[in-house]
Length: 94
Ligand SMILES: [Zn+2]
Image 1 (cartoon, rainbow, N blue to C red):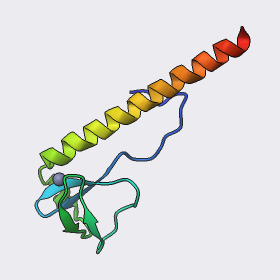
Image 2: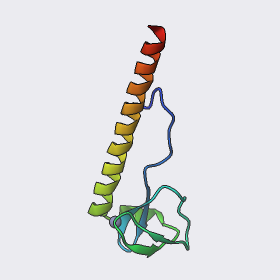
Image 3: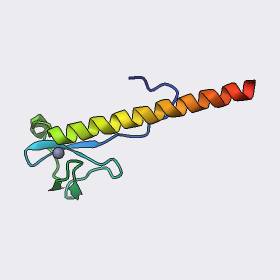
Image 4: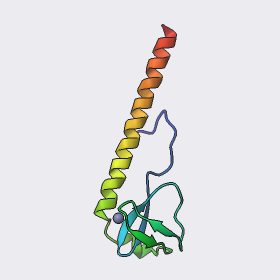
């Protein structure tokens, strides 16, 4: 995947190991230990400070599917925007 030509919009999701799985959290707020957060698969969790070994927990399938869908939707938006910018430039140069 290329990042040329458009700005990085920040992470699609944050991953945090909690309750035995690595779950994804919505990107709006950076996760911090002690927060009560809703994962993108709909679980309500209390975040802890993850230890290195916690990252070895299995990835939540529902969160992974949602994270991929969000990434693809963002890539699709970026493609559409690039296409629009191209057409605008072509129209100006005509
Ligand atoms: Zn999950």
